[in-house]
Amino acid sequence: MYRERTSRLEGAMVWTRTVRAEDGSPSYPVLPDGCMDLLWIGGRLLVAGPDTRAYAPEGIAGLSCAGVRFAPGTAPALLGVPAHELRDLRVELADLWSPAEVRRLTARLAAAPDPTAALEAVALRRAAAARPPDPLLRAVVDALEAGRTVAATAEAVGLGARQLHRRALDAFGYGPKTLARVLRLQRALTLVRDGVPFADAALAAGCADQAHLARETRELAGLTLGAYAALVPGGALANSETPQPSGSTTTA
Image (tube, rainbow, N blue to C red; front, side, top):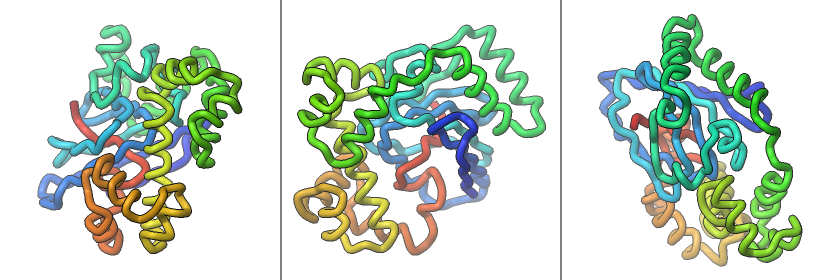
């Protein structure tokens, strides 16, 4: 069972999932979404870095999982590490923060009546102590989300192409071209989940045509469009283990 809600931390989402030990359903891949997550899984604090390809979670049967999904570009300032260093990785939080601090936080979450709320509180405290999010990064995401080209985005935020690429690597984990692809795929698959025909979803999201969307879905999601759409009617898309815009449920 998967649930998510808007976090008290601006731009973030809080999600939970319980995976029954007897659940024999396939563990569908988590798709790239430009985000990073702080995770609480099986009594461990983990961080999910930005993905450039679909990630297939393993080892979560019988576990209750929770996460705080940070808005694109906001996690590095909170975690204290450039996003590109965590690209396509799941790591222990103790590898990034003081092990003694992480042991204290782990004990606190393990004893908390609501570990999910306690995890959100960790993120909120960290955000209060960190520098505020760079508005330029939000402008980059907004421009690419609106379908602007990388060149037009760089011009809009007042950066050269190389400057934008360096800033994007630190903030998002990959360059603006890859971020644009990820955001475009998410726009298209959101429309597909809403029942929009493939060709119409492709054009509305900014793809050249349905074949373009099909290639992007195979490369980034590891699925054909048909296989992705087949998951929707059965409700499989309602949890973070399925191909959807959100979710990084996994173990390291």
